[in-house]
Image (cartoon, rainbow, N blue to C red; front, top):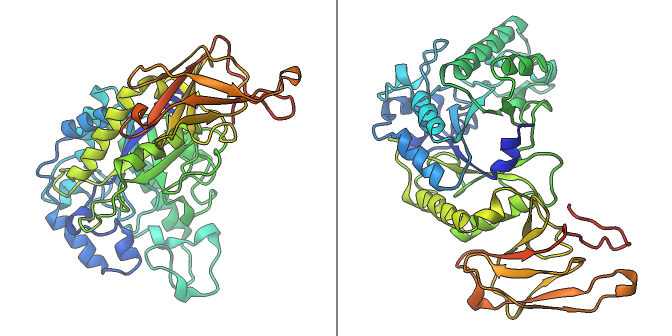
Length: 428
């Protein structure tokens, strides 16, 4: 696993496509029969990208504090945002935009040192060869339940067509991986409609690595990905290995003008803190309008998150996952040398912040954003059995940050937390 990914903490996801024209759910709106396919595809005529400014996007991503970005090169509808030679269904040939949007995005992101990620849908509900087989090659008993965009409705599979489709995917991915400089990450979606064998794994992954042996691939590859990608629900316990939580700012991935159910900046910052406390990244999504502009509310969230991160940078970058919530009822991170513990205080304390199981003497406690030094006292403990007491850090509402407060606890030795049975537990 590439070190940069585990240290990135924040990425920005961008769902951009023709679905923004009418503000409908990307691809799913026709797949689930909410609108006819023809009506969905008519959005091609209204997709202008007239104010699309990749440099503006990249500046915003940089200001958010994100270290990588992921853009939808092609969603399940099959509409490519680049000038692919393998299909006419792309924004250069079929929309008034007439621009290779991926090229501009890749250049803008790369020149700022932001890691370049590309989302690609493995499934293509517009491609004539795609609905040629069933998942795992098993013909379902009830053919009335088969979706015509996914699989044959007559019970007859065509393996040759399926092979042609896999070649089509390989060809498009070759364009993405060779035409836009070094791609750091491929973010796949749609693997669930076919088995690993049908996707030709692990050979398919070897093929992708032949373009860049260091490429990172997300988990949506039938068990052959490099890290886990829980979606919309923050994990309750830490997923094993490297992971990333992807989520929306409101409830939609793409631009839906009627979706006013926005998460507040405070909620977003708290979610971010929860992710890094468990050693993961957050991939926060924006959905630009069809002209390429971004809703002010989404922009404000990104800028607000970036402001908070910059103020508390040392508690975010270069840190590792924090202590377990049995010790502290909140989030936390630990410095690389394990001599500093950062506690995330989500709410305004009445008089104290409580920390249990700390074996180390505390050298100093400061409020990170203000530099104010705080006092503490320790009650209880059984020193002759090396059982630590409870640390009460004196803190009131006047010491807090507007969003999430960070307390910096410094020690002379590496952090030790009491394991409850004499054992020391230092991480999750």
